[in-house]
Length: 283
Image (cartoon, rainbow, N blue to C red):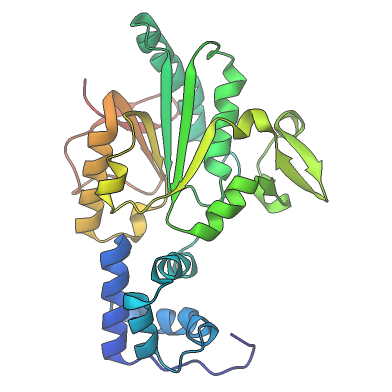
């Protein structure tokens, strides 16, 4: 939307239509006080598609050829995508220093030298690449098959993730030794090295689309940080149930620091590590 250009007006009826369409598509829920937010952030999209009203935009979202990609764009516009490498350090310490050694010991005993991790809601890729770097750091996985699956509902952020080229803002807490070891300079930015990139597989994924999530293999660890905060209760339950089904017995679910499964699920047990509290699928 051009600076100074007036907002298009969103009627109460149109707001309800678009709000419900978004909720049914991806689980993100808006209350009655969010009408102005949608009006402000989506007016530019209405004009971008050369439509004259939010009513026309609703029909485009429902029946248009580019509806899926546009809904992904809406999710970006209406949620916060702040992410950076090595975010929430205390949780990553639990992952690297406690969870990984435990899994190596238990799986190694049984001769199952495979590790699968899922970054659900991976945004522009900083989280799954961080996990890949931490896996490489330990040097524990020689002879193992390590796969990190990374999915997001936005095609735009997935394009950025696959390129693996990042500016300064992505490195706000990254130690210099990691930058030197796992990145190479490119036109004033930093490009992730192939040894990290080859561990991560990016794909488009809507967490509510259980038909697609069920196609994923059993995971040992699932990261879903700061995603469920946007969902309504019913959608949270559906997504968490799919996480439970996808986790191998004894596997771990790591949520954002402000998130919990209280009133959502009783299937997991809360395990106390030295660095963090983590949900585990009971053995």
